[in-house]
Image (tube, rainbow, N blue to C red; front, side):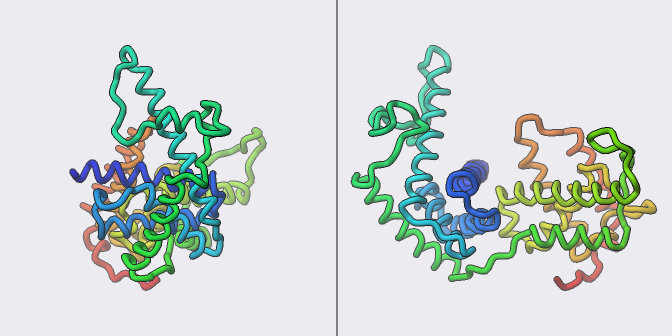
Length: 316
């Protein structure tokens, strides 16, 4: 398997974990993030060819729910994940059938069978298909997920306490706001309703916008292997920087960003930011010009900020 194929497998399975955990199982955001970290750590030690990645994802969600005190029954995890996967397979099959003359071959192992689409209660509707709890497939899945849960625990060395970037995003934004270190490059004068903005309201909007976009970037970071490369505090800090650039928020008094961001070097900030931007550039409608501007700023920071990049990192 090539490195690009591995990246694609990670991205697609992370989307599956996000969809299954957040929407289908209604797990809290932190539990979904924990499942994603378990997944990345598992496949840092195992090859994708060794284990079905969707079965591993199910086991990660099951384990993360217990870890983050939001447990879900194994039966529910299997049913919801199975349904989601079949729905995706049905959608892909429909897409393939709509190709040139409907003769495009489907991806091996990804298309559902006619029997699956016509399973009891399904009526051919992929939104309603259910796995039969008495079927051999269900029994096999149950055994596999329980086995994989144990394999994951041994793989990660029973290290279940996971730090995520979110709390560091909030801490960083609060500290920057408390010291009045940020400002809008082009301050808004009215709110969404067209009403004039006071200084206080403008600052509240800045804080909310900076925090929300940084959390969005942190969510995106989960689809990369950044959690294997950097501390959660460093990822969170880089997400605040990306949010500032994206939101039109800059350091006050013309200071460079790297002087404001504690606990991270220019090299680390650049590496984290570029990996997130690379992921986002693949999305439809990506704001590529904005990404180019951020890349130029990072290049300038690396060139101009060499001394500050070597400063002692503060303990988090």
